[in-house]
Structure formats: structure tokens, C-alpha cells
Amino acid sequence: MERAGIFVLAAGGTGGHLFPAQALAEELTRRGHAIHLMTDERVRDYGKSFPAVETHIVPSATLSLSKPWAVPGRALRLYGGYRAARAILKRVKPRAVIGFGGYPSFPPILAASRLKIPSCVHDQNAVMGRANRVLARWADAVASSFPELMGLPPEARGKLTITGNPVRDIALRQQAAPYPPFDRFNLLVFGGSQGAQFFGTFMPEVFAAMSAGERAGIKLTQQVRAENMDSVGQAYRALGLDCELSPFFTDMPKHIAESHLVVCRSGASTVAELGVIGRPAVMVPLPHALDNDQLRNAESFAAAGAGWVQPQAGLEPKAFAQFLTSLRSQQPQLQQAAAAALGHGRPDAARRLADLAERLAGIQRA
Image (cartoon, rainbow, N blue to C red):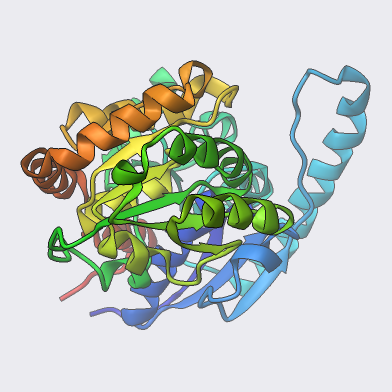
């Protein structure tokens, strides 16, 4: 094999962008390559375990027209980010640059294009993100998590490769975990910051709408915002519910593997990890999201027979309690949905994307 090289990965500093970037970084590191990460300040929350030789904080900003008076200042900030990214790329001399969306990926991909460094943008969602739609015109390749990628510019269709959404090693360790026996019913509820806020208010009302007999035998694991821990815990204790609550679970894939059913948002990384592990989910997509990307992700998962979509606007505690109670009683259906989730998953996505990155870099593997 040709000698190892340096790759720059560019991603917005949220879990949805950083987790697949981390998965690719782990795979490229196994192949002997060195990784540099370009991102924003939010990396402090999500990037603690990112295997990068160096992390570069690059200025960025959205160019949303909802606040036209702010556009000049944001454009200047993006230009500053472009100059910073260009200087870093000239110093690091990577073989290729891979972007994972979000506006922090904008300056590095643009700078790579101007410096004639091969580049690729990867989109995690079923609907292409707005930054990636622009960057696809300059990038040499586009990688998609879904067979149908809505919003892809017509001139970029010839660049498209379906790789799937890479999942981290911590999730791959739970790949195709055996479905748990039904000696109790393990229910996992999580949803990021906004999802934790909604579920922390909604789920206590759901369990209150169940009878004591319907709650019996449920083991609940739920992500709850720190400021809501006391109130949610008191509500569950009053109902006699067996529960484990935390603002953050360090090994969420392990909790997914131990569950019979997951109630969650439908971010791309969540959908990818559910598919690799093989667990059914009731998905409540984030409302008011740009381009309804979470709704499209959830619809793809549900269409495979792996889960159910419940829009937040129509949720009512009593009806949702009846829905969960009914699902709990249908053990064969849950097991079938778990198998369908595995069919939807792409555990080889990181390998596929790493292969694409090496091809762009001109690296031939034995």
C-alpha cells in the first residue's frame, strides 16, 4: 500500500456532525493515517474523544437571510474563516479534506477547492444540508447516508456515492447485539438537548396516564436535562416507576443494545446507531427543523419496518400511553422491527467512506 497520509476532517461542532466524522477518523487512524480536525468552539462538548493529531478552531457563520442586517458581519467572519483554513491547509498539506456539514465545514472545503486539494462532503441526513448544497458544487465528491438524497444540486449528481452514515467504534462494539429477553420491558428515552426538554415534560404525563398494572415491569432509562432532574425524578418516584435518569449517558449505544424499544428524536446519527445495533424506535422528529430533515430520516427508518413516526404536534399523553402499552404486548412485532432495523443499518459505512477518501487522495490499498 502507498504510504499513509494526512487527512483534514471538517465538521460543525455538534454530535450530529462530529460523530460520523469521528467514525471516519477512527477508521483512517486504523489504516495508519494522521487526522486533523477543523471545527468550531462547540467541539468542547462533543469532541473529547476525537482521535485528531490537532484540532483547529476556525471562524464560521451562517448566511441566513432571516436577519439581513447581520449578513455583512457574518460574511466577514466566513471570509476570516476561509483565510484561517487556507493557512492551516497550506501548513498541514493534507492528501484530502472531508467535510461533514454545518457552516464550520464551509471555509475548509472552499479553501481546499482553491488550493486544488481533493475534497468530499458527506451528508448524514435524507435531506441535504444547506451548507453542503453549496459546497457540493466545489467538492470533488459527495457521499450520502441515504439512497435518496433530497436537495442534491443537479450538477453534483455525478459526484454522488452512497456510503451510509459512519458510526463510532463505541456503537460498532454493540453491532447486532442479541435482542434482550422479555423478563422486564426496557424502555430507553433520549433526544439531545431539545429532545430531553420535551421528553422530560411529556413522558411523566404518559406514565401517569397508564394504570399501575401497565407500568409494572417497565425499566425506564431516560436522558433528562440537569435542571429538570429533580422534578422528573419526583414524578416517577410518585408513580413507583423503576427508572434510571441522567443528563448524559457516556455509553448510549450500550443502553440502546439493552433496550426493547427506544423513544427518541430522529437525528441522522441516532438513526444510524439504531440500525447498526438493531433496535426498534418510536421517533418524534424535531419540529420546525430546517427542511424537515429529521422527519425524512424517521420516515426512511419506519418505511423499512424498523419503527414508528409520531409527530410532536399531534402527541397526547393518554393516546401515547396506550400506544406504548400496545407495542409492549406485541413481542413478535418488536422483534421483527429489531431485525428490520438491522437491515436498515450500514455498519460498513466508515469503511466505505474511508475507501472513498483514500481514492480521492490517490492512495492505493493492497
